[in-house]
Figure 1: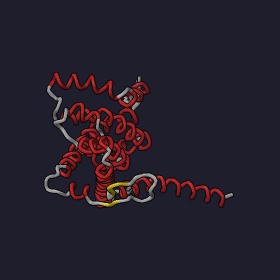
Figure 2: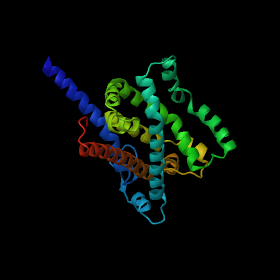
Figure 3: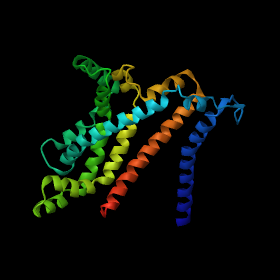
Figure 4: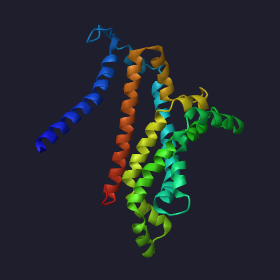
Length: 269
């Protein structure tokens, strides 16, 4: 029975790995393919047009990529600054209407984004935030805050506030409790929340296009015309850059946090 379960588990794992690797392999092949008509199993012609364009001096995509990473990092930082106190209130404290607020925090991802975005766009035009960097940053907070709060809320529910109370009894100040007790305790959840927020912000197309008005151009907006026009070589290269960038940023983020806490000799990571 145990051997049978192990075989089933291995089969499922191999299927999942295949489902993850196969699309990436197709993207890599397409990025070098001039034409790949049906029913050929391998492309008929190969070329480097896409890589030559991306690495050319006139290509603006690398600068747009850096700009997109910067924008998403700003969104991530602001999101965490809002999500940490909100998640702690919902996860640790008891108050009337707590269940209602837990449900309400999901409203931005339950309500259709088109309906939310149109209303926000009108308001941003009135207050002068439309077609600006900060307008796009603020609108990216709408779909990302529910994820940040929910992930950190679960962490706070597990961690509780007993360690903070002990520190308070020993005479620690609130700022010391936050940096030396709370922050290290929620660090794993913080990395998860930051990763999720960054990916959601980095992949936003509709909200960026609507609020940015074509003046704020992110990597996804730069990539979309190639996908829409059916240029599979360019679309594949842009998709690979998108995937690699997301993976690298998340890896750096996780490694940096783990390195910090190892240096500080904390025991939870």
